[in-house]
Length: 240
Image (cartoon, rainbow, N blue to C red; front, side, top):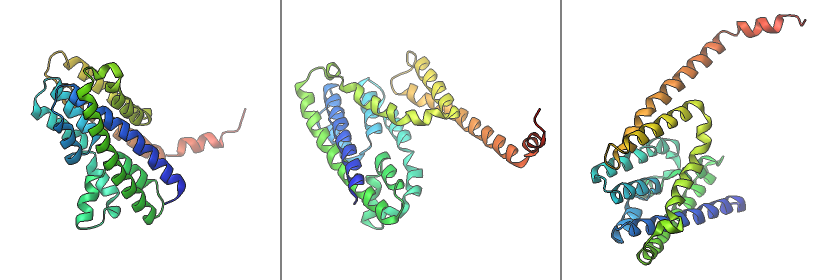
């Protein structure tokens, strides 16, 4: 593995370890038993789904809604599997590789040009993140028993900040940005009326907006490509 790739992976491992620490501290500081964040981190190993699940449960939400919200967040792993199926291997390697398939491992794998570097990046990042995340969660859970108010340390803002940084580039797309704004509005409007967890699920009603806008833009691009007459006429007009 080349030095620049190893350096980038090491920085991601450090960042995710810190986020894992915040997750463990927030979960225990919210009144949940110490074993719960540790078990989630081993069996689920998906930061966004874990934070969402714990947040809904800590707010008094329905466990079923918390599980459904986590499953919906992790549904993005389905296309991930098709994109990097060649690096997972077969047999037990495929099971292990699927378990460590998260945003970071997929991003590093897809960024590599040849197959060997894809596999090296995926497995180095995946195994490293699994270890660092779980160590961070254990340390955070222990710290959560000693700190009565984890919000005073700002740990509750750590993961939302990471998620915001991840989604900001996608919001440059007008269709995605419009759907995100509608989803936020729906969730905020439903929060005073519905139990914790349901407003997040209800915000998914904004997804058809993104699909419709993307389809509309695709039709416009297809139409402009099929009818270049207007641009040709403009090019043939003499300058005045």
